Length: 400
Image (cartoon, rainbow, N blue to C red):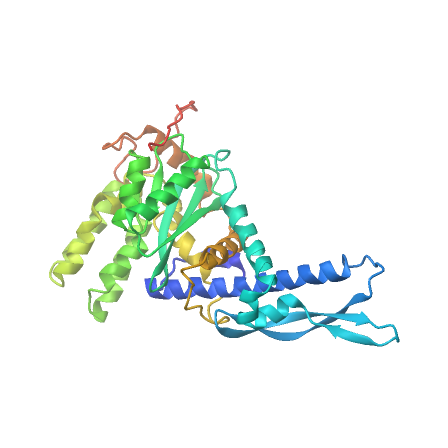
């Protein structure tokens, strides 16, 4: 499946399934990394491809091989190298990278392990070393995905005023606690992430994420991920009520403006109240964050991408059903950091502009005009306001 096909619909998998999909993607990326390491060793032994040299070593095609990926055997294409002998015969040369990838004990003991780490760190440096100061950011998305029982990844994606998505960074922790979230935000700010207006932050519902975003961008507009909220409520209802809940949330993602959104929320309340008090409490827990984007009265063409954090979750759906499942990460090493950096770098190659990007100027205008606690751009049930004349807003410096 092509990465660009992953964003055609909102994901309908549970949080646990999303974590499995995420790990599946990482597993595929590790196999690709192993192939790159073997190719680098072949070039070191034989010289650049299509550039003959005086070496007695030469490329001899490929064959299927099997390597260990997190304790399980995986098939890879193994490049072959042969060596000419003085008597005119040839012998197979065993690649140290392939041998070490096939034997975990040798991998830990051999010099090739440094090559694995070097390749992995290259992607960490590539992802975390990019300056973020040169782009005009409008949206920040943060979502936490469980990797294993004791490790969780918080992934940050930014969207520019032109509609382009970029992986910003990630951090690892046992939970979405404020310390991990704060470290992630500090690194983003240090690399130049800023917003020349109020920031729209789309979050998965974590209290820690919301608290930390407000620490750094106190006047930010927080939009709760509707997909996460729908899943949470779904888990509290009998199956026979799922269809009606899905219909109402679909309407909420479609309607435009504060008044229309509040009407749908009212229908949700009326639907849930006689059924389940916990489901109703879950709906109320989101508060105004549930319809923050609606309150800005932007065109509903932007709703598809900006009412959920699925730009993060859907990034890892392309390997489902094709790859095995990584179930263990060695927490005492930087293994997960290297694998995640590689996976996220690969995912970003398939990113496209968000749906409705041509209407982003309306969002920019609304965020520039909105004040904390007020929504002057709201026109109940009506179309988005005409854009104001271009101005040069003062640059808002994030709070530390």
